[in-house]
Amino acid sequence: MIKLDLQRISGIETLPLIEGGKGISISNGETCGAWAAAGGVGTFSAVNADSYDENGNLILQTYRGETRLERQRELIDYAVAGGIAQAKIARERSNGNGRIHMNVLWEMGGCEEILVRILEEANECIHGIVCGAGMPYNLGEIASKFGVYYYPIVSSARAFSALFRRSFKKVQDFLGGVVYEDPWLAGGHNGLSNAENPQNPMNPYLRLVELRKILNSFGLQTIPIIIAGGVWWLSEWEDYINNSELGATAFQFGTRSVLTTECPVAKAWQPKLMSLKRGDVKLTPLSPTGFYSSAVNNQMLSDLLELQNRQVDIVENSPLTVTVFGREVCIDADQKERVASWIENGFSTAMLTPSNTVVFVTPDQSKQILFDQKNCRCCLSACRFSSWCQHKGSTGNIPDPRSFCIQKSLQAVAHGGDLDQNLMFAGHIAYRFGVDPFYANNFIPTTRQLVERIAGGY
Image (cartoon, rainbow, N blue to C red; front, side):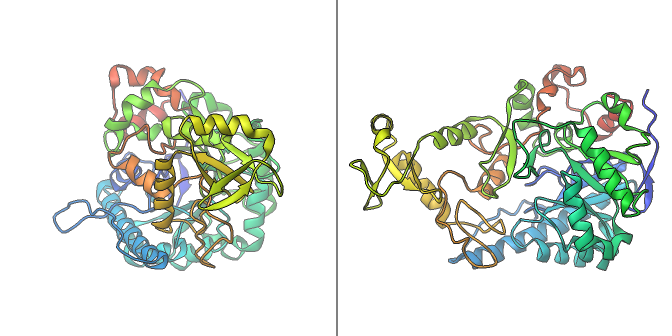
């Protein structure tokens, strides 16, 4: 039996068990409130969360703006309305127990405005803000202004040190904890640095010890480290609990909390999750954010990975040319046979990339890529797929056809879309749904049952 002491999180003593935030619309007010009601820390995603009309019907996020700026304004308004709605649902479902946290991505479009506007309207519902995907230098200032605790997500001690020295030290009273998200194990976007090898995972314990040393050097000995990524059974992490080298620790469950009766996608996702085998979740650099990310290797991901191999270098002079939207481009003549094979198999349309290459796609794929790029909803602060940048209007690079519209795909996968043709984020231990006896006979637990199971070590 695991000895699991209560931790002080966001102002009260709670179970050190935290629901990982999963956007878009996977972690919502229902899941968050249920987790908090069970005595832990619930988390709803404020990344373009769902909102509802006066009759409780889902409001579809449709965009009518003719320009990118107009569409981003629509997106921000949807996100604010959704965040407020989910915060209020979470508070009601929690019955006053546990804590309610809101998860945002720093590099999502309009992040700071969305944060502020949600807190202005739903401050009394939210106890903490969890933020990753970037370096959220202004997070502490925004949170402290509203008297809300903040939890930066980092993947290294170095990243936290930079954040603290530059901004968090000025508002450390509301620093509630630090989420260490293992970049080789966690689902969604991962914080791999350029110096780290995506194929060479490092020992999480050593990285956590390094993070605790940095925290202690800043006088933050009592701040808990929230361990995220790769956590399934607490019995496997017993050495990390009440460990003098690590200090106060809590544990975050992202992937595992998908299969609960409160989660809106549980029934639709269950067959896919239960069928996964070890290695079926891939860490790739395909996201339009520019970050590495971990997702289920479905048909969409396989097609994108295959696309990376159907490209050739552009050269100054070559007898081999290809027409790219009416313009002749010289490409590496040594690739003549490969190019001929691609064209013969239907990949007859060449598209430029920002890496001075051309990729070959089908005519229908090209039309869809151009359509999605043109109709960019500006969901990111900068998007390599569409070349959108909210600070300058454009990243300065040409749009990258080797990526995809992440807003479109995540909205679809959360709202009944094809699980094989859309991005399905998951942690690398998602295969354990199929081997854990807790889920035998397609059992989907309530959140309370899951929290109780986890607290018992399994």
